[in-house]
Every structure is written in C-alpha cells, then in structure tokens.
Length: 132
Image (tube, rainbow, N blue to C red; front, side, top):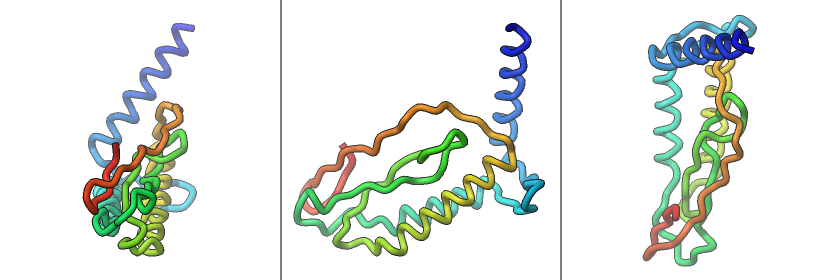
C-alpha cells in the first residue's frame, strides 16, 4: 500500500514538473509537438470569438466547454451571446483547442482528478451575458 502511494506521489510530481516547464516532448505515437504556449494562444483566440454583448433575452446567453482535462471533460467554460457570436468559428476554435490539449496531456502523461464539472448558469445584465 505504501509503495502504491509513493508511486502515485512520484507520478504526480513528474506531471507537475512537465506542466511548470512547458516541456515540448513529442508524443511518441504521433510525433506532434504541442506546448503550453500554443494551448494558451488557442484559448485566447477562442475567448475572443465568444461575444458576450448584444443579447436582449437571458435565453440567448449560452456556455461552451473549453479545453480538455487529462481525466476527460472540459477544463473550463466560456459564456457567449448566441445572437452576436459566430458560433461556427467559436466551436471550431474550441475543438482545435480541445484536440491540442488532449495531445499535450497524452504526450506528457498528465493526470487529473475526475470530478464532473457542470457549466455555469448564465445571466443577462443589460445586454451582456455573464456567468452567475
């Protein structure tokens, strides 16, 4: 039992080291190199596509999953106004981000907790969508 705990601690420490250094080791299966900076750039681009202003009804405010956690599921959520957001462009960029993050997680052998993350509720303040 103690050996299992020690092994898990060592693996967790190794994962944290890869994340902190932004290592660019290629995935041995695909040879693709994705680094943390590329993931951050994709997320910045996706969030810029998510327009929060211009809605007239609360039902026009939506959320979309952002990124991918090593255990699966989204890392975060973005709020957007369905009326003013180019949803095709947004979801295309979010899918690109998800694939890049999956590749990064796989290449670095990252692990995470496996709790279920629910999207935030949205609200309309004036004409701007926000998370509650």
